Length: 377
Image (cartoon, rainbow, N blue to C red; front, side):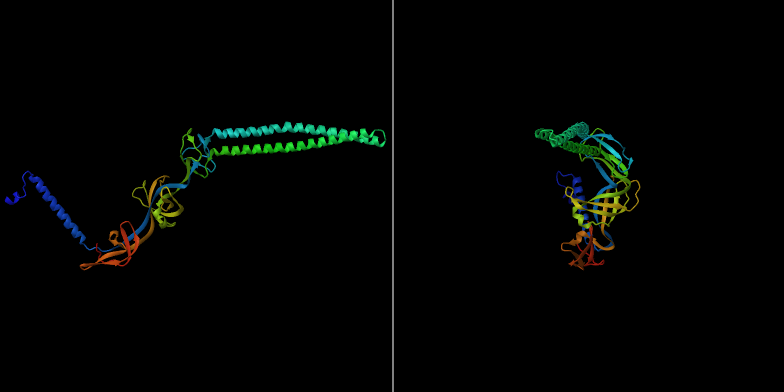
């Protein structure tokens, strides 16, 4: 009883003392277990090892693209429903723009005015030219008469000269009227042609406000409601071919040198839990997205997957290297300078190694040790 009472301090409950003793015993046991674990021999393992690059992205339908508005305005009419099949050139949406309508109407009015001006102006100038021609012909006859009279000494030279001058003036007036008629006709036809060109341009611009499908496919999404404001170059719809899909992925810029077309890919799609699909890298894009610091990579599905929908999230491991029998050690055992500690009896020494495939927590050793080598921490 005396030995027990030595642990009993005044004012301290006996339960707390017993609990502290139990805690010390547990900590001592954990320490002994850790030491025994550290003393266990560590040997390399021979097993399959794969080095992969992580990528994430979405399932995308073939030839999927966004339809952009070509002008500012409002969404005047939705011509198709989501999920509806369309042919190339099928109208999808109509954008209503007051500015484009006013421009088209102005072009039409200018063209119509040019047409209306041509006929009366040409008729007036034609009449002037014909009148000048008639006067020229009359003065020509009169001049010829005075010429004959002068030869017969039946008139004076003054009368002859007056008749000649009158004829020459009439001829000049006719030539001027004829030239003015030809020039005016050319100018009016040019004005009509230019006005018609403006109408064609306005019609073409007006056609841009009717947004059409560029492919034979399906309207996957309408991104605006009828009557909503639409800005130029704003995405308003998505069209694609949902019978075929691929993966549109992003790879961290630090891994871009390790990814190449033709590499195998292991795919996990969130909607298909516990299933891994096979794929292949089909395209590595040559430009890094500076905002996201990532590179776009496209992967084609090699397995047939039913029930795919565009937009499903996916995670992918792109296989860089793979070995069925690799000599593998834990990564934390590899020392700086590519060396590793090996145990030789009660001693240990540092051995130079050559690395192979690496993962987050394991390293393949190509040379320097064998499967029988005992490693040391």
